[in-house]
Length: 259
Picture 1 (cartoon, rainbow, N blue to C red):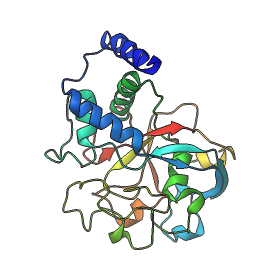
Picture 2: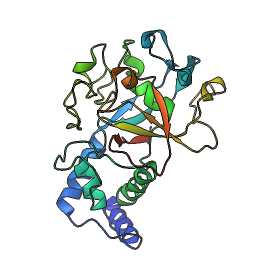
Picture 3: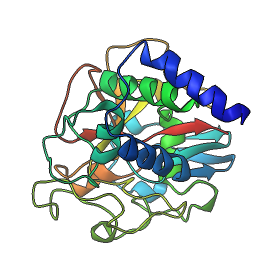
Picture 4: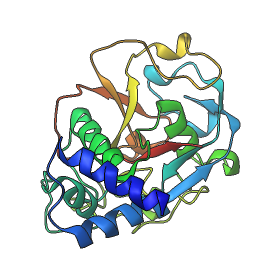
């Protein structure tokens, strides 16, 4: 009862900052799906960057490979979908519309932060973007990693929507095989924003425990590759930076939550 009263009060306060979503049933469904879809990634070490399993496809920004310890956290089983975005934001910015179960696309890092801010106001939780290290650890399967080249295996066609099989569009989340941690689309479909600022040579100075990226920068990290990219770009170690106010039709995101 106390939680219910708190939740109502929170919604009332939040409504002074923004209009509550119009479709309450869709909102309830979205919030429930988001909450139930968070997967625990248990604490552990991993080799971040150009490890041996990444073969010859590494680029300089993935070097040097280095040992990182990541604390336990939760990450979403799926990318945020168009239906979830629309339920929370009352809009759908995606270029590939008419697919509610496809990942939301055409969202900037700033847009993702706006969604998270509103989501947290509606739920009272502290959802966030994963750090780059958290994302890669999760993409590799966390403590259950088997050392695959892609997120969940070595045959990318079973795991990812990328340039050779996507048909030039996004696809419903979870329609390929998951990785060892039970996460879907960590390779391909849409790029996923991370919380970190991006720097090509950050790995040379990265701390060994829970790195959070440089203190400042001009670009934010994106991970995972997308429906437009070659297979080598969809590897767990692959990393790029994008301006946080730019929107592209192959950019989306997934949520994280502290343990």
